[in-house]
Length: 226
Length: 346
Figure 1: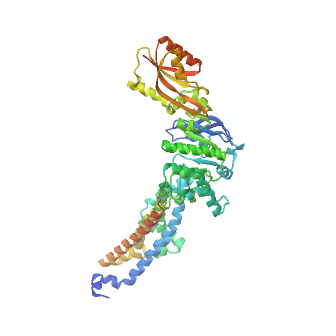
Figure 2: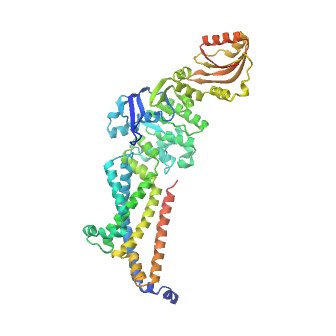
Figure 3: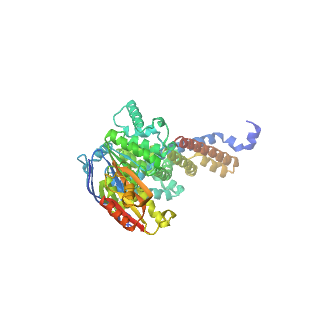
């Protein structure tokens, strides 16, 4: 180990295994919660879009329930959601701590946000396209897959990027309730034990992570814009 | 045959607006193979009416029958199958921006039971039909308006429809492109024997391709008939308005308004609009007038066109000569069934 590296970040070198473990935990939370959020959020975003008044399958009851539920969960601060959902977490996952324990609150925290993002992305679809495909004899399912989703690939990629980045922020907060990960790593050492280099390495790691997500999302969006 | 009987469509607006009666009791029969025009100003209900044919809009009451089939009685699945035989094109083309020209035309062919090669063959056939083969792998954003509409027509014809609905299909195009698209529609109707329903607010469109036309105002059909007859003897004020927009003779109203130096008249002169309203006008009218009644006839404007294989139109002229001779000349014209309208006496 070179001398200057030891001088620059003495604590990071010592805590290197913890650092790697924190990265792994953050990745686990991001990938698991993100994947579940993507599937559920995309589904609910489509449902909210098509059941809207004037949509292709208008349904007042479903639309109103979904719309209100999304608003409700979006208005609860995540830190409250984390503790409030502990019983549900225990029931579904068998535990309320560590990575397993925060998947449920992470999903509840990110899905409503993603649903609104999906809704906004799909709303960019020109009504004329929907009308044209209906005039060609498309079924509602075909309209959903071949028009709404297919024609919205670029805005959906951007919506997914924004949500993935905001989810990364939530995983850091989840560290506060014993989930581990980079947030927990920074708080435990960087803040509590005043190890500034640990805080710095965490911030740098997160900046790199956000940049990668942003780059990939932007690339996919660009590929699908004609 | 498309048969619309007592079609009513009422839209439920928000509570303050109440309801909007878009279509009020319209009955129409459109024969197989004809090009039928529906003209009206925006808000007249023509777009709503045409959507009642393929049920993109379900009428509040009334009956829609296509080739003897009661459309409103179909199950959703049967309706989708029927729609495949009713093509539709739109003012803003509605092509899918993320698909190439090929992908757009292939869209309605998916699930039709054709193999990949068969679909590719059919798409090329269609692109040839609308004369745009070289753009197969291009995205819609790289096409001009006229090219986009050609692709949209190819897409609408993919499943060999018997009917083609055109909702303001040329309204976003320049006059030259409009003419070429109309020509294409006319030749396709002839070649494929399809019935074409044309919605428009431009009398030019009706004049150049339609055999019959319905004039709509405020949700109702106020006048219906052969295009020639409508042009020759419009009954309703709104029909006359539309005809004026398509005729260069209407320029005279502006010239009169501006008191143009063009219209300098001497005492006793008469400024007259003559309209040809019979199918057999072929005599050399102007020279006959000047010979028979010893008049000077100054042509200010003239607009004669062929509509439905007969000349239609008229001239705006200034008669100069003896007062009595002018009066006899006007009488003579009226006897010959020519529309005479004195616009100004000097």
